[in-house]
Image 1 (cartoon, rainbow, N blue to C red):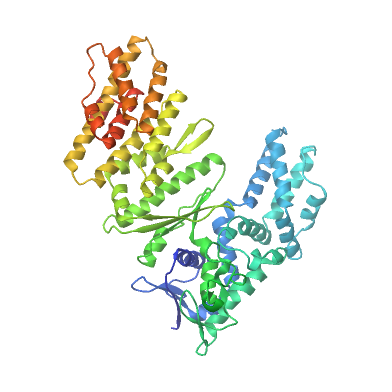
Image 2: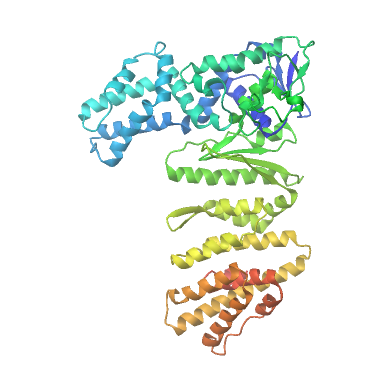
Length: 560
């Protein structure tokens, strides 16, 4: 059996391989007959006869619809049609701001330029095109009678659910919301092709060249693909410049090449793979993510599996889903590499036009931190309740703590933010403060060689936190304060002193507090002496003391 072999490469090509496998699975291709993975897991292969006769355009469009369909404007329109229709049927239709916004959303999205262009391409292939034309002439409005509006909504829903309408309108959303974050300036993303048939354009630029490349003999070809190294003829060469953030427009900027002769070209096979790269990423709320664990293709596929898929409906579910992604990604990294620790590349990209690729290398030392029991437990707890409201914004504490670990930053800036928020807004954030501090302390334990010494430091931190809690009780008792409001000013001063590592200011405040409220019963803890001698201990012990002072000490539970 003659095979076309695909080897892994950079993260975009690897994403293309994952997307290729997803596309073949969605199309019902037979593994180990039409395609497969070599025994050593280092290459993916296609049966040439199957590949040369496959309808790659239909496969690609089906995969995009299946993967992104529930994340598109098309789904948002259907949801709002059903919502309005249900209210009319239940006789609860009383047009307010929500209902007016829903009708406006339906009108605006269905009559956008991209949807109108899509309709023009399929109007002769679908039933009842007059329903869409009617919408152009008479938009939906809350001033219509309930009976008339219900009829219009039912007509629109039936019209939109036609397979051709569904594919076309979803693809219009997918192209301009997701695919163009990865590649642009070619096929249906070339500005001059905006009103042309999307299927015909993909067939012409990607599918047909790929099929032809598999059939044609390349023995006399002199040029080589810059990616796979296979021969390619001059007519088949595809510029890699269509991929975003990969290269400049080589037709305009040639100075980077020897003698200004551009040789950065792809063969049609690799170009097709790169076009599939959006299908290889997983989408969670407003983030694309790809785990580039390329030890073998099986591991790569498992790390980016799309089996766990849920819809995006409403802001709250988006937030839950985003947190779920973080937890899933961490589990993938940890479960696959507990036995054999090695570097893993994680690639993030937002869905906004201005977003760029964000690459993080999860090194052996970071993996060791992530699998440390204390860190793992704290991150798991934060993953259950990741968001905290600070002023008018929701902060994802779980995400920030994880990114601090991945990028090898300390957690003290995040801890500082949480403690100030707890004081300013008079809210209890003890859960978040304790979790973040635990991550920081356990991270330090992993990185230090003297484990016994680090354990002693940990006990000192616990003692400092207890001392802060005891001083809190003494001050509140002296001022007859039951809420802790009388401590807010002092707590702010101590946190500010910690953030700029002002030892003198910090010690001066603590000394005055013990002098005024210690009453001879409370003594300045021994940890304060070590804080004077060591800047690192000043930060560690200092934060522990303030945590107790603001009420984060949990007594016997914490000691255990």
